[in-house]
View 1: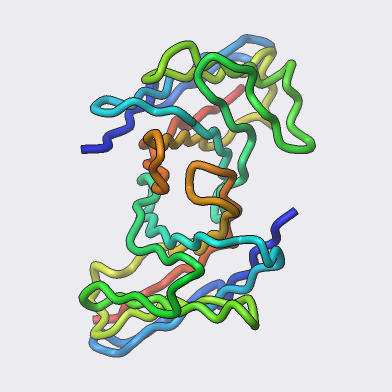
View 2: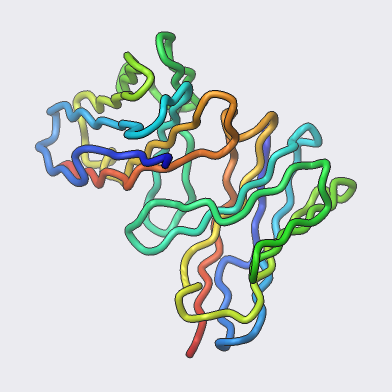
Length: 113
Length: 115
């Protein structure tokens, strides 16, 4: 089955700096890669997703890149703000979110004011 | 749109009792619902996938007789933890997808504590 590895497990950045979280996946058939943000004690919220026919996608301060050949994808957050502090999960799926989604271990991001 | 609710939000029960958790899609029809378990500071581990009107598909290592899943309608799925034990204490989260949709919308989770 699919295996998603994520790093780093924790990340501290100064407010205004950029943060990068990297993930790799094992199943070359995976074609849908969502990223979720989970604040303490709350539900995961989708922040951005990308399909395998796209190399990069951007939404304001958040961008995701995908390298199908290397089977890795990354989340980039620019101009970080304290409210960006949360746990971020990458995930991979074959066929889309209505199919089984395998999550990474999560990255705890702390933005220091 | 795309709101998913769970009930109860937390539950404390005695060892050996059964606990039922409901997951509802409030403003859309959910063809597929997923049940996850999340231990503190860990990732979401998929327990099972349920499609309306059919039997749930359980992940390897998840006991289907212990974690009963029913998806009786397009807006409701239930997870029953039978004969709960302290090791079943965890955060249980459901998610749902629309027909033809890609995004999984998560419920707020249910925190279960078995004494």
